[in-house]
Image (tube, rainbow, N blue to C red; front, side, top):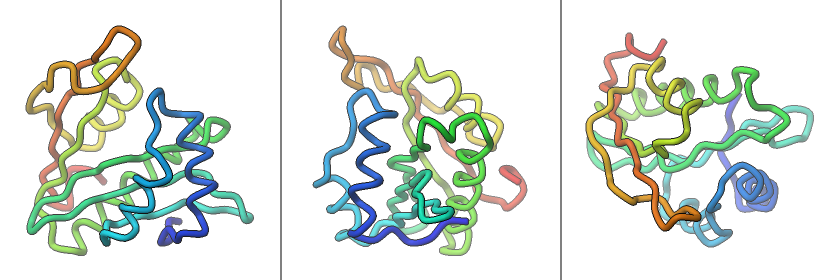
Length: 150
């Protein structure tokens, strides 16, 4: 389902990012992720990029930096499918743990990550910008045993 993101995909990915994120990544963020060798993937069907995911690996750990699904494609299982594929890629790369941060107010993402085997391990106070200055981030980890997120 996922394929490697290329520089040619950045415009489409950026268009999705700008709609689905309150404070979106910039073109430079995506270009840097590609240039730094992160696992950058897109979901494409019938020539349309429907979602993307960015995973940064470091030794036995990884961090899911960004995952986004086009607004018209949300709530149809695509986010879950992309998450599972990213966790599978991490397993294949001998990653033992995947970390992430998610806005405390993002109930849908928290439910997805909880159901995929992520465990809440902390809070980063005021981590995300918002209209009131800052919003807490929930930090989570998934231990990759091959059984938790199936």
